Amino acid sequence: MNKGCSRLFMKIRLHQFLSKCGEFSSKGDVKNAIWDGDVTVNDSVVKNIAYEFNPAKRSVKYRGTELFLPSNDLYFLLNKPAGYICSRLNSQELELNKTSVYELFRNAVEPSVYETLVTVGRLDEETTGFLLVTTDGKLVHSITDPDKKIRKTYRVETESKITERQLESIRKGVSVSVVEYGSREEFRTRPAIIELEHKSCAILTIDEGKKRQIRRMFTSLDNHVTQLHRLGTEGMQLDDFNLDEGEYCSVTLDEINQSIFA
Image: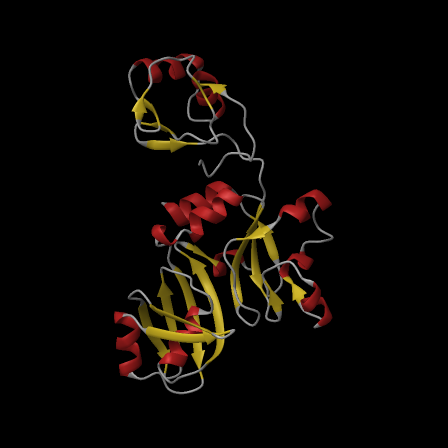
């Protein structure tokens, strides 16, 4: 499904789609691109300008580059503060006086927007830093899809010195075994990139995102994470946006695509 499309679409003619996507300067350029065989729909060349399709279900490319209709979705980058969870509050969490990151947006966006906001992946309650929040569910899937191997970078501070043995284990992959709610979960992490900042602080880049993965990795290596801060996702870095903790700003889908999927 196309990342940049609105949530609901009826069928549209191919020449209309191309005219709206912003790639071409005239209707003549649109027709020539189709007739010259430079346009594909789901990787098949289509030379019929009146061809009808649903852009929410089919991928359109011009000379190999995917095209999208303008998005009606909203995109925010939040510098997530500690003490906030990345989900809507259930009754138990309300009783425990938990706070959701969505509350940061409640009075700043329309109620209809507030109700459709979702986080792109989750940071646990005490983890801070880079967090995309959007109304675009397709973008969420694109970034969190484990097969895409999107890289996320973190600053990790630990209770004890990070040893060479721990660094090598993380670079090769860590075997994690966790018991929760009476059941055991076992997995091996993918090889990661890690470099020390000082003896108990490292910059870590992973391309997967299992629940509490980084904390569990270090626990499995007999160390304990005391602070965890996400610096960025692929080429999109929090420091470039000058946001204090708890602040957010609007970003565009183009910014996200160019930084994360380029």
